[in-house]
Image 1 (tube, helix red, strand yellow):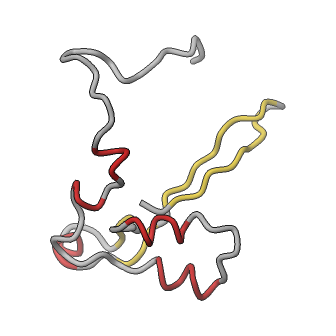
Image 2 (image 1 turned 60 degrees about the vertical axis):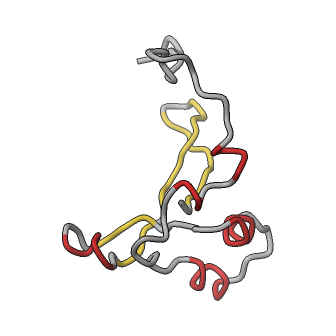
Length: 99
């Protein structure tokens, strides 16, 4: 998915801030909502999204609804598909001691 990662200052503390970019819903998603996340379905588009020199036109070209049937494990980079999975029942969440 396309998103933005930055920091924000809340009550004097710098914290991570993230946004998921959305676009008009298409296909099956349009039956349940008017918006859907921008999905970057292949490595070329994922790398393009991470470039520092993106123009407004580049962003507009990348932020289009994904075609039905395109999303899935084949759309994720190999490093994500091949990551080490935790043992059954293990938690992926680490407690930070806050809130």
